[in-house]
Length: 121
Image 1 (cartoon, rainbow, N blue to C red):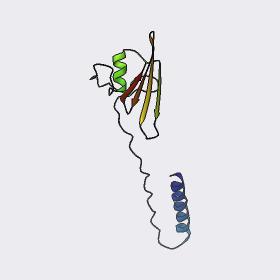
Image 2 (image 1 turned 30 degrees about the vertical axis):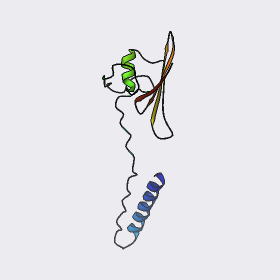
Image 3 (image 1 turned 180 degrees about the vertical axis):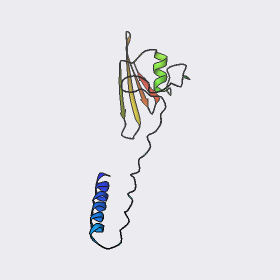
């Protein structure tokens, strides 16, 4: 996209310079179409890298079970996680790993697109 914008700017400067020294009628500038940007999917309230929710949890989850949202886990656990990893899969999906270190052991929660996929204890 930078190359297209740079080329358009150079073309505009060249046309401007040509138009100021010649008696030819001005040439209309060619509009540059904006690059199409895919809208980021909206997953609702999700956990950020700092372990906090970015919005209000749905509060519909009654238990920790596959399918609940990331922020629902935080609400049900009642405390901040020990660690959070936020990333993207090779398929463009949002993937989040949430670690809780508990006195009885560690629990690792795997989310895909804001849905609990699996739990490793």
